[in-house]
Amino acid sequence: MPCAAPCSRLPCNKRCFKILSCGHQCPGICGETCAEGYCQQCSDKLDARVDFLEMKSYGEIDLDEEPIVVLGCGHFFTTESLDGLMGMTEVYEVDEHGEFTGLKDVSGSLAEAVPCCPDCKCPVRQFATQRYNRVVNRAVIDEMSKRFLSTGRDNLRELEQQITNLEQSFDKSRDEIIQTIRQAYQGLNLPQANSTKIAKVLKERHAEYTKLERAIKYFCDNVADKHQPAQKLHEATVYATRKAVAASEALDVLLANTSIVDTVPALARDHQITRGGRMIQIKAEYFMINDKFLVFQALKSVSAQKPMKLPGGAPDLLAIPFFKRSESFIDECNSENLPRLAVEVILLYASIARSFESFCRSTKTGLGKAATHTEMAKQLLESAQEVCEKPFQNAKSLRTAVEESIRLMKKEWYEEVTPEEIRAIKAAMVSGSGGIATHSGHWYNCVNGHPFAIGECGMPMQLARCPECGASVGGQNHRAVEGVTRAIGMED
Image (cartoon, rainbow, N blue to C red; front, side, top):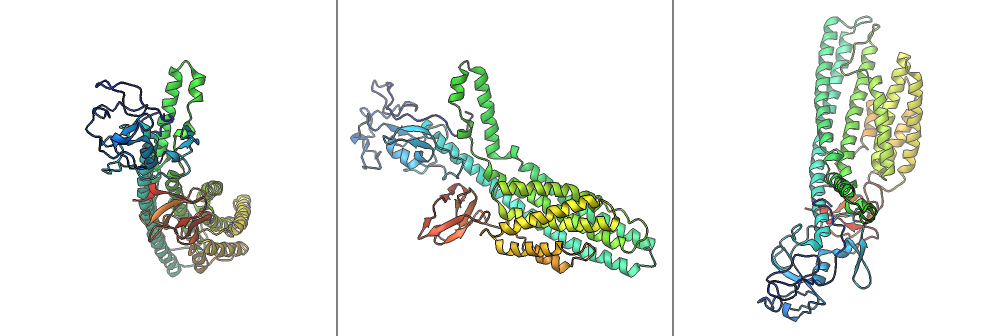
Protein backbone atom coordinates (compact mmCIF):
# COMPACT_ATOMS: atom_id res chain seq x y z
CA MET A 1 0.00 0.00 0.00
CA PRO A 2 1.18 3.60 -0.61
CA CYS A 3 2.13 5.96 2.20
CA ALA A 4 -0.94 7.24 4.12
CA ALA A 5 -3.21 4.33 3.13
CA PRO A 6 -4.84 2.65 6.13
CA CYS A 7 -2.71 -0.46 6.65
CA SER A 8 -4.23 -3.75 5.49
CA ARG A 9 -1.85 -5.93 7.51
CA LEU A 10 -3.26 -7.73 10.54
CA PRO A 11 -1.25 -6.93 13.69
CA CYS A 12 0.54 -9.73 15.51
CA ASN A 13 0.15 -10.14 19.28
CA LYS A 14 3.31 -12.17 19.86
CA ARG A 15 6.45 -10.90 21.55
CA CYS A 16 9.37 -10.13 19.25
CA PHE A 17 11.81 -13.05 19.22
CA LYS A 18 14.87 -11.02 18.19
CA ILE A 19 17.84 -10.39 20.47
CA LEU A 20 18.91 -6.89 21.44
CA SER A 21 22.52 -5.70 21.37
CA CYS A 22 22.66 -6.28 25.13
CA GLY A 23 22.06 -9.98 24.56
CA HIS A 24 18.51 -10.14 25.91
CA GLN A 25 15.26 -10.78 24.02
CA CYS A 26 13.48 -7.72 22.61
CA PRO A 27 10.65 -6.60 24.95
CA GLY A 28 8.57 -5.24 22.07
CA ILE A 29 5.72 -6.63 20.01
CA CYS A 30 6.28 -8.50 16.76
CA GLY A 31 6.34 -6.22 13.72
CA GLU A 32 7.88 -3.20 15.43
CA THR A 33 11.44 -1.92 15.31
CA CYS A 34 13.37 -3.57 18.13
CA ALA A 35 13.23 -1.51 21.32
CA GLU A 36 16.93 -0.90 21.90
CA GLY A 37 17.46 0.77 25.28
CA TYR A 38 14.23 -0.62 26.72
CA CYS A 39 15.46 -4.02 27.88
CA GLN A 40 13.64 -4.95 31.07
CA GLN A 41 16.72 -6.61 32.53
CA CYS A 42 19.13 -3.76 31.76
CA SER A 43 16.81 -0.75 31.80
CA ASP A 44 16.60 2.04 34.36
CA LYS A 45 12.96 2.60 33.35
CA LEU A 46 11.47 -0.09 35.58
CA ASP A 47 9.37 2.43 37.54
CA ALA A 48 7.62 3.75 34.43
CA ARG A 49 3.88 3.18 34.45
CA VAL A 50 3.12 1.09 31.38
CA ASP A 51 -0.18 -0.65 32.19
CA PHE A 52 -3.37 1.45 32.40
CA LEU A 53 -5.58 -1.51 33.25
CA GLU A 54 -3.86 -2.66 36.45
CA MET A 55 -1.59 0.40 36.82
CA LYS A 56 1.55 -1.74 36.77
CA SER A 57 5.07 -0.45 36.33
CA TYR A 58 7.49 -1.77 33.71
CA GLY A 59 9.26 -3.90 36.28
CA GLU A 60 6.02 -5.65 37.26
CA ILE A 61 4.80 -6.91 33.89
CA ASP A 62 5.49 -10.24 32.17
CA LEU A 63 6.76 -9.36 28.70
CA ASP A 64 5.81 -12.76 27.30
CA GLU A 65 2.20 -11.96 28.18
CA GLU A 66 2.32 -8.18 27.74
CA PRO A 67 4.96 -6.99 25.24
CA ILE A 68 5.53 -3.25 25.03
CA VAL A 69 5.15 -0.73 22.21
CA VAL A 70 7.51 2.26 22.05
CA LEU A 71 5.94 5.40 20.57
CA GLY A 72 7.79 7.97 18.50
CA CYS A 73 7.97 10.33 21.48
CA GLY A 74 9.91 7.72 23.49
CA HIS A 75 7.18 6.78 25.96
CA PHE A 76 6.24 3.11 26.06
CA PHE A 77 3.29 1.05 27.28
CA THR A 78 1.91 -2.46 27.18
CA THR A 79 0.36 -3.48 23.90
CA GLU A 80 -2.98 -4.18 25.55
CA SER A 81 -3.14 -0.71 27.11
CA LEU A 82 -2.25 1.12 23.92
CA ASP A 83 -4.53 -1.01 21.74
CA GLY A 84 -7.49 0.19 23.77
CA LEU A 85 -6.43 3.82 23.74
CA MET A 86 -5.72 3.80 20.01
CA GLY A 87 -9.11 2.25 19.17
CA MET A 88 -7.86 -0.88 17.40
CA THR A 89 -11.26 -2.56 17.66
CA GLU A 90 -12.70 0.22 15.50
CA VAL A 91 -10.59 -0.80 12.51
CA TYR A 92 -9.98 -4.55 13.08
CA GLU A 93 -12.21 -7.53 13.76
CA VAL A 94 -11.19 -9.24 17.02
CA ASP A 95 -12.17 -12.70 18.27
CA GLU A 96 -12.97 -13.73 21.84
CA HIS A 97 -9.28 -14.41 22.49
CA GLY A 98 -8.20 -10.91 21.50
CA GLU A 99 -6.67 -12.03 18.19
CA PHE A 100 -7.10 -9.84 15.12
CA THR A 101 -9.05 -11.77 12.50
CA GLY A 102 -9.89 -9.24 9.80
CA LEU A 103 -10.30 -5.65 8.68
CA LYS A 104 -13.35 -3.59 9.59
CA ASP A 105 -14.97 -1.42 6.96
CA VAL A 106 -13.96 2.10 8.01
CA SER A 107 -15.68 3.86 5.13
CA GLY A 108 -19.01 4.48 6.83
CA SER A 109 -17.91 6.86 9.57
CA LEU A 110 -15.35 9.52 10.35
CA ALA A 111 -12.39 8.65 12.54
CA GLU A 112 -11.58 10.18 15.86
CA ALA A 113 -8.77 12.72 16.09
CA VAL A 114 -5.23 11.49 15.49
CA PRO A 115 -4.40 9.39 18.60
CA CYS A 116 -1.88 10.80 21.06
CA CYS A 117 0.58 9.51 23.63
CA PRO A 118 -1.28 9.19 26.96
CA ASP A 119 1.64 10.78 28.83
CA CYS A 120 2.85 13.72 26.72
CA LYS A 121 -0.16 14.04 24.36
CA CYS A 122 2.17 14.07 21.37
CA PRO A 123 0.34 12.74 18.27
CA VAL A 124 1.32 9.21 17.31
CA ARG A 125 3.46 9.74 14.23
CA GLN A 126 2.80 7.89 11.00
CA PHE A 127 5.25 5.04 10.44
CA ALA A 128 7.06 5.60 13.78
CA THR A 129 4.88 2.84 15.22
CA GLN A 130 3.85 0.25 12.63
CA ARG A 131 1.15 -1.38 14.73
CA TYR A 132 -1.16 1.63 14.72
CA ASN A 133 -0.73 2.78 11.13
CA ARG A 134 -4.26 1.76 10.13
CA VAL A 135 -5.68 3.86 12.97
CA VAL A 136 -3.36 6.82 12.47
CA ASN A 137 -3.52 6.94 8.67
CA ARG A 138 -7.29 6.73 8.71
CA ALA A 139 -7.43 9.66 11.16
CA VAL A 140 -5.00 11.71 9.07
CA ILE A 141 -7.03 11.17 5.89
CA ASP A 142 -10.23 12.14 7.70
CA GLU A 143 -8.52 15.28 9.01
CA MET A 144 -7.62 16.18 5.43
CA SER A 145 -11.23 15.58 4.41
CA LYS A 146 -12.44 17.80 7.25
CA ARG A 147 -10.28 20.67 6.06
CA PHE A 148 -11.43 20.05 2.49
CA LEU A 149 -15.06 20.20 3.66
CA SER A 150 -14.59 23.30 5.82
CA THR A 151 -12.84 25.28 3.11
CA GLY A 152 -15.28 24.07 0.48
CA ARG A 153 -18.32 25.06 2.51
CA ASP A 154 -16.89 28.52 3.14
CA ASN A 155 -16.37 28.97 -0.60
CA LEU A 156 -19.88 27.67 -1.32
CA ARG A 157 -21.37 30.23 1.06
CA GLU A 158 -19.45 32.99 -0.69
CA LEU A 159 -20.62 31.83 -4.13
CA GLU A 160 -24.23 31.59 -2.94
CA GLN A 161 -24.00 35.18 -1.72
CA GLN A 162 -22.60 36.26 -5.08
CA ILE A 163 -25.53 34.58 -6.83
CA THR A 164 -28.00 36.31 -4.51
CA ASN A 165 -26.37 39.70 -5.06
CA LEU A 166 -26.27 39.29 -8.84
CA GLU A 167 -29.86 38.07 -8.93
CA GLN A 168 -30.97 41.16 -7.04
CA SER A 169 -28.96 43.32 -9.41
CA PHE A 170 -30.55 41.61 -12.41
CA ASP A 171 -34.04 42.08 -10.97
CA LYS A 172 -33.39 45.80 -10.62
CA SER A 173 -31.84 46.27 -14.06
CA ARG A 174 -34.58 44.15 -15.68
CA ASP A 175 -37.20 46.42 -14.15
CA GLU A 176 -35.32 49.38 -15.58
CA ILE A 177 -35.25 47.72 -19.03
CA ILE A 178 -38.99 47.09 -18.91
CA GLN A 179 -39.60 50.66 -17.74
CA THR A 180 -37.49 51.99 -20.62
CA ILE A 181 -39.50 49.88 -23.06
CA ARG A 182 -42.79 51.18 -21.73
CA GLN A 183 -41.71 54.80 -21.79
CA ALA A 184 -40.17 54.65 -25.26
CA TYR A 185 -42.73 52.40 -26.93
CA GLN A 186 -43.97 54.02 -30.14
CA GLY A 187 -46.19 52.15 -32.52
CA LEU A 188 -44.85 48.66 -33.16
CA ASN A 189 -41.13 49.17 -32.57
CA LEU A 190 -38.69 50.73 -30.14
CA PRO A 191 -36.79 53.83 -31.25
CA GLN A 192 -33.23 52.99 -32.30
CA ALA A 193 -31.69 55.00 -29.47
CA ASN A 194 -33.60 53.04 -26.88
CA SER A 195 -32.78 49.73 -28.56
CA THR A 196 -29.09 50.63 -28.45
CA LYS A 197 -29.35 51.56 -24.76
CA ILE A 198 -31.09 48.30 -23.91
CA ALA A 199 -28.57 46.26 -25.90
CA LYS A 200 -25.74 47.90 -23.96
CA VAL A 201 -27.37 47.10 -20.62
CA LEU A 202 -27.95 43.48 -21.66
CA LYS A 203 -24.31 43.15 -22.69
CA GLU A 204 -23.13 44.51 -19.34
CA ARG A 205 -25.44 42.14 -17.47
CA HIS A 206 -24.13 39.18 -19.45
CA ALA A 207 -20.53 40.16 -18.61
CA GLU A 208 -21.42 40.15 -14.91
CA TYR A 209 -22.97 36.71 -15.17
CA THR A 210 -20.00 35.36 -17.14
CA LYS A 211 -17.70 36.50 -14.34
CA LEU A 212 -19.79 34.61 -11.78
CA GLU A 213 -19.99 31.58 -14.07
CA ARG A 214 -16.19 31.45 -14.29
CA ALA A 215 -15.85 31.70 -10.51
CA ILE A 216 -18.23 28.76 -10.07
CA LYS A 217 -16.42 26.71 -12.71
CA TYR A 218 -13.08 27.45 -11.05
CA PHE A 219 -14.47 26.23 -7.73
CA CYS A 220 -15.97 23.07 -9.25
CA ASP A 221 -12.71 22.25 -11.04
CA ASN A 222 -10.77 22.63 -7.78
CA VAL A 223 -13.08 20.32 -5.83
CA ALA A 224 -13.47 17.74 -8.59
CA ASP A 225 -12.97 14.08 -7.68
CA LYS A 226 -9.31 14.07 -8.70
CA HIS A 227 -8.53 16.79 -6.13
CA GLN A 228 -10.31 15.16 -3.18
CA PRO A 229 -8.04 13.75 -0.43
CA ALA A 230 -9.59 10.27 -0.44
CA GLN A 231 -9.60 10.12 -4.24
CA LYS A 232 -5.89 10.94 -4.40
CA LEU A 233 -5.23 8.12 -1.94
CA HIS A 234 -7.47 5.79 -3.93
CA GLU A 235 -5.52 6.45 -7.13
CA ALA A 236 -2.21 5.93 -5.34
CA THR A 237 -3.50 2.65 -3.90
CA VAL A 238 -4.67 1.41 -7.29
CA TYR A 239 -1.31 2.30 -8.81
CA ALA A 240 0.60 0.54 -6.03
CA THR A 241 -1.61 -2.54 -6.35
CA ARG A 242 -1.14 -2.76 -10.11
CA LYS A 243 2.60 -2.31 -9.73
CA ALA A 244 2.74 -5.07 -7.14
CA VAL A 245 0.64 -7.36 -9.31
CA ALA A 246 2.91 -6.80 -12.28
CA ALA A 247 5.99 -7.58 -10.21
CA SER A 248 4.57 -10.62 -8.47
CA GLU A 249 4.69 -14.15 -9.81
CA ALA A 250 2.20 -15.33 -7.21
CA LEU A 251 -0.69 -13.33 -8.66
CA ASP A 252 -3.48 -15.32 -7.03
CA VAL A 253 -1.91 -15.01 -3.59
CA LEU A 254 -1.43 -11.28 -4.00
CA LEU A 255 -4.99 -10.67 -5.11
CA ALA A 256 -6.32 -12.80 -2.27
CA ASN A 257 -4.52 -10.62 0.27
CA THR A 258 -5.17 -7.24 -1.32
CA SER A 259 -8.42 -5.39 -0.88
CA ILE A 260 -8.70 -1.89 -2.27
CA VAL A 261 -12.18 -1.57 -0.81
CA ASP A 262 -10.89 -2.23 2.70
CA THR A 263 -7.92 0.11 2.50
CA VAL A 264 -9.39 3.15 0.78
CA PRO A 265 -11.82 5.50 2.56
CA ALA A 266 -15.18 6.18 0.94
CA LEU A 267 -15.52 9.37 -1.08
CA ALA A 268 -19.01 10.32 0.14
CA ARG A 269 -17.85 13.05 2.51
CA ASP A 270 -15.65 14.75 -0.06
CA HIS A 271 -18.46 14.43 -2.61
CA GLN A 272 -20.59 16.77 -0.50
CA ILE A 273 -18.53 19.70 -1.74
CA THR A 274 -18.56 18.51 -5.34
CA ARG A 275 -22.32 18.11 -5.12
CA GLY A 276 -22.59 21.57 -3.57
CA GLY A 277 -20.69 23.02 -6.52
CA ARG A 278 -23.06 21.36 -8.97
CA MET A 279 -26.03 22.71 -7.01
CA ILE A 280 -24.55 26.21 -7.24
CA GLN A 281 -24.13 25.80 -10.99
CA ILE A 282 -27.75 24.75 -11.40
CA LYS A 283 -28.97 27.69 -9.29
CA ALA A 284 -26.89 30.17 -11.29
CA GLU A 285 -28.12 28.71 -14.58
CA TYR A 286 -31.69 28.83 -13.34
CA PHE A 287 -31.70 32.50 -12.45
CA MET A 288 -29.88 33.41 -15.69
CA ILE A 289 -32.26 31.43 -17.94
CA ASN A 290 -35.31 32.64 -16.05
CA ASP A 291 -34.12 36.22 -16.45
CA LYS A 292 -33.63 35.73 -20.20
CA PHE A 293 -37.16 34.40 -20.60
CA LEU A 294 -38.54 37.49 -18.82
CA VAL A 295 -36.42 39.90 -20.86
CA PHE A 296 -37.31 38.13 -24.11
CA GLN A 297 -41.01 38.33 -23.27
CA ALA A 298 -40.75 42.08 -22.58
CA LEU A 299 -38.85 42.79 -25.78
CA LYS A 300 -41.13 40.66 -27.93
CA SER A 301 -44.25 42.36 -26.60
CA VAL A 302 -43.25 45.75 -28.06
CA SER A 303 -41.64 44.70 -31.32
CA ALA A 304 -43.25 43.36 -34.46
CA GLN A 305 -39.82 42.81 -35.88
CA LYS A 306 -37.46 39.99 -34.91
CA PRO A 307 -36.50 40.51 -31.24
CA MET A 308 -32.94 41.63 -30.57
CA LYS A 309 -30.47 38.87 -29.80
CA LEU A 310 -29.72 38.25 -26.15
CA PRO A 311 -26.01 38.02 -25.23
CA GLY A 312 -25.09 34.46 -24.30
CA GLY A 313 -27.82 32.84 -26.35
CA ALA A 314 -31.58 32.50 -26.47
CA PRO A 315 -33.25 31.07 -23.34
CA ASP A 316 -34.88 28.16 -25.17
CA LEU A 317 -31.48 26.89 -26.34
CA LEU A 318 -29.95 27.24 -22.87
CA ALA A 319 -32.89 25.48 -21.22
CA ILE A 320 -32.25 22.10 -22.91
CA PRO A 321 -28.84 21.40 -21.28
CA PHE A 322 -30.25 22.81 -18.02
CA PHE A 323 -32.99 20.18 -18.08
CA LYS A 324 -30.45 17.39 -18.67
CA ARG A 325 -28.13 18.52 -15.87
CA SER A 326 -31.04 18.92 -13.48
CA GLU A 327 -32.45 15.46 -14.22
CA SER A 328 -29.02 13.90 -13.69
CA PHE A 329 -28.58 15.75 -10.39
CA ILE A 330 -32.06 14.74 -9.19
CA ASP A 331 -31.33 11.08 -9.97
CA GLU A 332 -28.05 11.29 -8.06
CA CYS A 333 -29.71 12.87 -5.03
CA ASN A 334 -32.41 10.20 -5.01
CA SER A 335 -29.84 7.40 -5.16
CA GLU A 336 -27.85 8.94 -2.30
CA ASN A 337 -30.91 9.58 -0.12
CA LEU A 338 -30.74 13.37 -0.34
CA PRO A 339 -34.42 14.33 -0.73
CA ARG A 340 -33.99 17.99 0.25
CA LEU A 341 -31.61 18.77 -2.60
CA ALA A 342 -33.68 16.71 -5.04
CA VAL A 343 -36.87 18.64 -4.24
CA GLU A 344 -35.15 22.00 -4.56
CA VAL A 345 -33.83 21.19 -8.03
CA ILE A 346 -37.24 19.82 -9.04
CA LEU A 347 -38.73 23.21 -8.20
CA LEU A 348 -36.15 24.95 -10.39
CA TYR A 349 -36.77 22.45 -13.18
CA ALA A 350 -40.53 23.02 -13.06
CA SER A 351 -40.15 26.79 -13.13
CA ILE A 352 -37.97 26.73 -16.25
CA ALA A 353 -40.22 24.09 -17.85
CA ARG A 354 -43.23 26.38 -17.59
CA SER A 355 -41.30 29.36 -18.98
CA PHE A 356 -40.00 27.13 -21.76
CA GLU A 357 -43.53 26.06 -22.67
CA SER A 358 -44.75 29.67 -22.78
CA PHE A 359 -41.78 30.63 -24.96
CA CYS A 360 -42.31 27.76 -27.40
CA ARG A 361 -46.04 28.40 -27.72
CA SER A 362 -45.59 32.13 -28.25
CA THR A 363 -42.92 31.57 -30.91
CA LYS A 364 -44.60 28.44 -32.31
CA THR A 365 -41.33 26.50 -32.13
CA GLY A 366 -40.20 23.39 -30.24
CA LEU A 367 -43.70 22.45 -29.13
CA GLY A 368 -42.80 18.76 -28.87
CA LYS A 369 -39.85 19.45 -26.58
CA ALA A 370 -41.97 21.79 -24.50
CA ALA A 371 -44.62 19.11 -24.00
CA THR A 372 -41.97 16.56 -23.01
CA HIS A 373 -40.36 18.77 -20.38
CA THR A 374 -43.70 19.99 -19.06
CA GLU A 375 -44.83 16.41 -18.53
CA MET A 376 -41.51 15.54 -16.88
CA ALA A 377 -41.89 18.54 -14.56
CA LYS A 378 -45.37 17.39 -13.52
CA GLN A 379 -44.09 13.87 -12.79
CA LEU A 380 -41.18 15.21 -10.78
CA LEU A 381 -43.44 17.50 -8.78
CA GLU A 382 -45.76 14.60 -7.95
CA SER A 383 -42.81 12.56 -6.72
CA ALA A 384 -41.53 15.57 -4.76
CA GLN A 385 -44.91 15.86 -3.06
CA GLU A 386 -44.52 12.31 -1.76
CA VAL A 387 -40.88 12.84 -0.81
CA CYS A 388 -41.82 15.86 1.29
CA GLU A 389 -43.71 13.52 3.63
CA LYS A 390 -40.28 12.57 4.99
CA PRO A 391 -39.12 14.56 8.04
CA PHE A 392 -36.00 16.17 6.54
CA GLN A 393 -35.02 19.81 7.06
CA ASN A 394 -37.51 22.34 5.60
CA ALA A 395 -39.74 19.52 4.33
CA LYS A 396 -42.90 21.41 5.29
CA SER A 397 -41.96 24.65 3.52
CA LEU A 398 -40.70 22.75 0.49
CA ARG A 399 -43.98 20.85 0.31
CA THR A 400 -45.80 24.20 0.25
CA ALA A 401 -43.53 25.33 -2.57
CA VAL A 402 -44.16 22.09 -4.47
CA GLU A 403 -47.92 22.50 -4.14
CA GLU A 404 -47.67 26.09 -5.38
CA SER A 405 -45.55 24.95 -8.31
CA ILE A 406 -48.10 22.27 -9.18
CA ARG A 407 -50.81 24.94 -9.17
CA LEU A 408 -48.76 27.14 -11.51
CA MET A 409 -48.18 24.23 -13.89
CA LYS A 410 -51.96 23.96 -14.28
CA LYS A 411 -52.29 27.57 -15.45
CA GLU A 412 -52.64 28.24 -19.16
CA TRP A 413 -49.34 28.97 -20.87
CA TYR A 414 -50.35 32.55 -21.68
CA GLU A 415 -51.23 33.35 -18.06
CA GLU A 416 -48.47 35.37 -16.46
CA VAL A 417 -46.70 34.03 -13.39
CA THR A 418 -46.48 36.96 -11.02
CA PRO A 419 -43.32 37.92 -9.10
CA GLU A 420 -45.21 37.20 -5.88
CA GLU A 421 -45.86 33.63 -6.99
CA ILE A 422 -42.20 33.15 -7.84
CA ARG A 423 -41.11 34.61 -4.50
CA ALA A 424 -43.46 32.25 -2.67
CA ILE A 425 -41.62 29.30 -4.17
CA LYS A 426 -38.13 30.75 -3.75
CA ALA A 427 -38.81 31.52 -0.09
CA ALA A 428 -38.66 27.79 0.60
CA MET A 429 -35.37 27.37 -1.20
CA VAL A 430 -32.84 27.44 1.65
CA SER A 431 -30.35 24.87 0.41
CA GLY A 432 -26.63 24.89 -0.23
CA SER A 433 -24.20 25.67 2.53
CA GLY A 434 -26.74 27.53 4.64
CA GLY A 435 -27.18 24.57 6.96
CA ILE A 436 -24.86 23.46 9.74
CA ALA A 437 -21.57 25.26 10.28
CA THR A 438 -18.55 23.00 10.57
CA HIS A 439 -17.35 24.76 13.70
CA SER A 440 -20.52 24.41 15.78
CA GLY A 441 -20.75 21.71 18.45
CA HIS A 442 -19.75 18.09 17.84
CA TRP A 443 -20.21 16.12 14.66
CA TYR A 444 -22.04 12.82 14.21
CA ASN A 445 -23.07 10.67 11.26
CA CYS A 446 -26.69 9.60 10.75
CA VAL A 447 -27.48 6.02 9.77
CA ASN A 448 -27.16 7.00 6.10
CA GLY A 449 -23.71 8.51 6.61
CA HIS A 450 -24.65 12.21 6.41
CA PRO A 451 -22.68 14.34 8.94
CA PHE A 452 -24.63 16.62 11.27
CA ALA A 453 -23.74 18.80 14.27
CA ILE A 454 -25.08 19.11 17.81
CA GLY A 455 -24.40 22.39 19.56
CA GLU A 456 -24.19 23.56 23.18
CA CYS A 457 -22.66 20.75 25.24
CA GLY A 458 -22.15 18.72 22.09
CA MET A 459 -24.08 15.70 23.39
CA PRO A 460 -27.51 14.56 22.15
CA MET A 461 -30.22 15.66 24.57
CA GLN A 462 -33.28 15.43 22.31
CA LEU A 463 -34.37 13.46 19.28
CA ALA A 464 -33.99 15.23 15.94
CA ARG A 465 -33.78 14.45 12.23
CA CYS A 466 -30.95 14.46 9.73
CA PRO A 467 -31.38 17.68 7.70
CA GLU A 468 -30.58 15.83 4.47
CA CYS A 469 -32.59 12.60 4.61
CA GLY A 470 -34.79 12.80 7.72
CA ALA A 471 -33.21 9.84 9.53
CA SER A 472 -33.35 9.97 13.34
CA VAL A 473 -30.37 11.74 14.88
CA GLY A 474 -29.61 13.18 18.27
CA GLY A 475 -30.84 11.28 21.29
CA GLN A 476 -31.82 11.67 24.91
CA ASN A 477 -29.88 12.00 28.15
CA HIS A 478 -26.58 12.39 26.30
CA ARG A 479 -27.01 9.10 24.43
CA ALA A 480 -27.15 8.96 20.63
CA VAL A 481 -29.89 6.96 18.94
CA GLU A 482 -29.07 3.57 17.46
CA GLY A 483 -27.07 3.80 14.24
CA VAL A 484 -25.69 7.29 14.94
CA THR A 485 -21.91 7.45 15.19
CA ARG A 486 -19.64 10.20 16.47
CA ALA A 487 -17.83 12.04 13.65
CA ILE A 488 -15.00 13.52 15.69
CA GLY A 489 -12.92 13.96 12.56
CA MET A 490 -15.31 16.75 11.51
CA GLU A 491 -14.71 18.78 14.66
CA ASP A 492 -12.10 21.48 15.08
